[in-house]
Amino acid sequence: MTVTQARNVVPPLMNILKFKGLPILQQLHLEERLFRSSSDNWCIINDGTNAPTIVMGVSGKPSELLELKPVLQDKVPVVGRFTGGGTVIVDPGTIFVTFICNKDAVPNVEPYPRPIMSWSGLIYEDVFRGIGDFHLRENDYVFGNRKFGGNAQSISKKRWIHHTSFLWDYDIRNMAYLKVPRRAPEYRSARSHVEFVCHMKDYLSIPDFIGRTVKVVGTHFSLRPMQFEEVNIHAKTSFDHSSRLLTDTELEAALVSQKSLYREDTGSSQV
Amino acid sequence: MASRLWASRAASYLRLSVSYRGFASVVKDLKYADTHEWVKVEGTSATIGITDHAQDHLGDVVYVELPEIGASVTQGNSFGAVESVKATSDVNSPISGKVVEVNEELSNSPGLVNASPYENGWVIKVEMSNTGEVDSLMDSDRYSKFCEEEDAAH
View (spheres, rainbow over the protein chains, first blue to last red):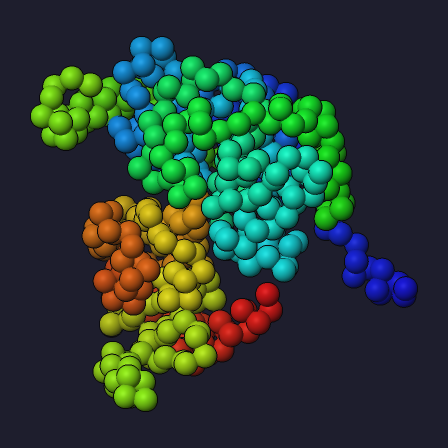
């Protein structure tokens, strides 16, 4: 192989940041800042977030997606994130893996939702090779027909972000805060949350999952471990985030709207 | 043959250029950005939307994030976004100016972007600040070729 040929096969550089228990809103703020103001490629892995939090996609409406009475009663925080997609409830049993890429770093992947999803599907196929019946199914990560990873994306002119929340473990009681969404994949077949999802812990340990992920990503990129303190060298220090915590006022207004919708649908005043 | 003739006449009436190789449609009198937005310029007024190529690659649009009326837009920069297949995708402005109207219909019917990308699926109207910027955009023939080259590269 000539020097020129060798240069051509050097994989692009990707910074890798690892956290444990980083609050999800902080993670989303970091991701949006890196996505919009850095020109590097990034992989972020967060082993669990500190407290149960509901996270909705950019177009999510609390009145349609959440059981607001218990959410307000139990003071569950609700975050609106900057990427598309559906609603999840994340907690210390959730593992997050995020890729932020320059489109030129993965030139065979067109910067549109489905090609990016196919690319990530192939990455995770390698991660889960020999473990369970892994598939990318209607844009979800599943073992068999049970979802264990939800993902979402944001795409700009030159970069894209693909982030996933993996259900390594979860508290069944938390699922009660979420309604069955109106827009759902066909394979869900109207199943409740409990019948639709599964635990990743039934398949592999956290160190094994993170180890496998880092190994597979390392075959596509040249990984550079980075500490959080170094991030400011690579991205703007102050940034106008769009991911935010919804206020009680907003959630209470959504509850009023939810109650009147229920009255219209059923002719009843009980929610 | 008759249906192809009808389609050709309909395309001509709508000033659509339709290739039978299955490529996305373009409209002759519009100008195009390399980020797949179109602009219709009438004096200093511009109407902006996303192209058929873009809507086809994005998938079913379920939400459109619109700017405020009065907001400034800059050539090449994002002014809003569309959501499809769990992704938000930036919509960039082909020209600079001030937003004077947004397509409120898209709030209730975001699918208009897919069904009618050049007509009812328009996104914003802008009072242009520099009509010379149009010269840096592609015409329909150049844009068609650009789309072919981009698709062939992947």
